[in-house]
Length: 168
Image 1 (cartoon, rainbow, N blue to C red):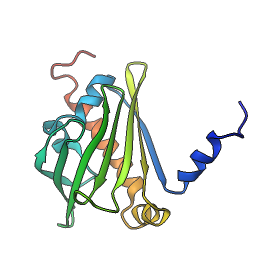
Image 2 (spheres, rainbow, N blue to C red):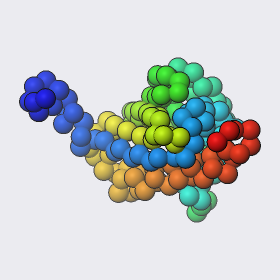
Image 3 (cartoon, one colour):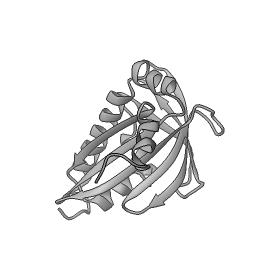
């Protein structure tokens, strides 16, 4: 295929606003997907190392919301809000993530779950409203490292809990 044409500009139009992180997790796709869909799972692994999460409300459905607070290891609380825009079990989840409903700086994320043998390759692709917001997330809030740590926490959580009712 040629690199020219209508498809190339669309990709480059968001490249300077994107962060993409992926990881192979040693668990079946359905289980990895489920870890994103139930608050009983999310509250045990969500966030970078040292963070904990308190959920105020949670409704996993298109148009549903997750209103929560992330507690940093230094005692800082981060107000967070997510609404799901697309759900395709067990292959993909799209969401809008900000500090609150209507946040003009909210970013869009698409998570894909692909089988990789007995494991699952998860990719989180996030597009920020502007290059400046992307750069701030990466430089000030360490979004790339935080995202890697979050997926590492997920992998650890699933590995530790996979034997409890799941066939390997």
